[in-house]
Amino acid sequence: MDMTKKVLIVYGTRFGATESTSAEIARILQAEGLEVRVVNAGKEKVTDISSYDLIIVSSGMQMGKWTKEPEQFLDRFQKELANKHVAIFVSSGVQALLEHEKKTEEIEANRKQYLEEKATRYHLQPVSLAIFGGVWDYNQMNFLARMALGSFKPRIEAAGFKEIKPGLYDTRDWEAIRHWAKELVAQIR
Ligand SMILES: Cc1cc2nc3c(=O)[nH]c(=O)nc-3n(C[C@H](O)[C@H](O)[C@H](O)COP(=O)(O)O)c2cc1C
Image 1: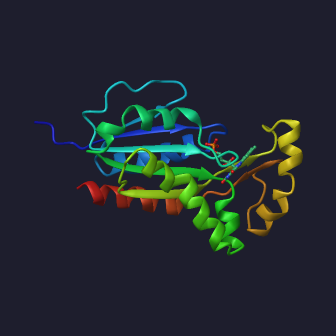
Image 2 (image 1 turned 90 degrees about the vertical axis):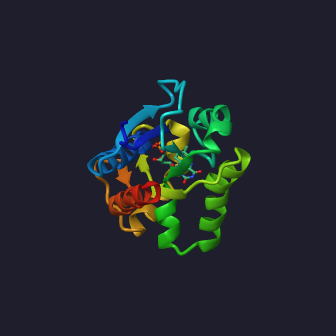
C-alpha cells in the first residue's frame, strides 16, 4: 500500500501572488516527502478529493473578497472536507502594512472576515489559517484602481518594501510561508 501522504492545493489568484505562494508551499511539502497536486481553480475543476490527506485552499484578497473559484470549491466539497485536514490561507496586500502600523484591531477584523468566516460558512475546522502578504502591481491595475490605491504606496514603503521594478511591490515574508508549510507537515504526520 502506498503510504505517501497526498496534498491538494486549490488556489484562486488575480495578480499571481497566491500562485507563487502556493508553488513555494508545494516545493516545501514535496521536499518533506509528500505528494502534492497544485490546481488553479480558475483554470481547472477538481472532481475528486477522496485520495488527499490534506487540502489547502487559498485566494488572493480584493476589496475584502476572495476570488470566486476556491470558494466554489469549499462549497461543493464541504461535506467531504469536514472529514479531512484542511488549511486555508489568503494573500493580502495590507497585512504587512497593518502589522507595521500596529493596527491590531484591523488585523483581527481581517482574520475574521478573510478566514474564520469562510471556515464557519462551510462548517470546517481547519488545522491552520494564515494571512500572507501579496503583490501590489500598479502596472496591472486599471486606471481607477491605480488612482484609488496610489495612497497605499507611501504605506508600503514605510513598512520597508522597495519597488522590485517600477510599480511592483511584493510584501510577502517567504520565511513565514515556508515555516507554515513545515508546520502543516507536522500536523498530518
Ligand atoms: C483593487 C484591489 C483591491 C484590493 N483589496 C484588498 C483587500 O481588501 N485586502 C487586502 O488584504 N488586499 C487587497 N488588495 C491587495 C491584494 O490582496 C494583493 O494584490 C494580492 O497579491 C492579491 O492576491 P493575488 O495576487 O493572488 O491575486 C487589493 C488589490 C487591488 C488591486
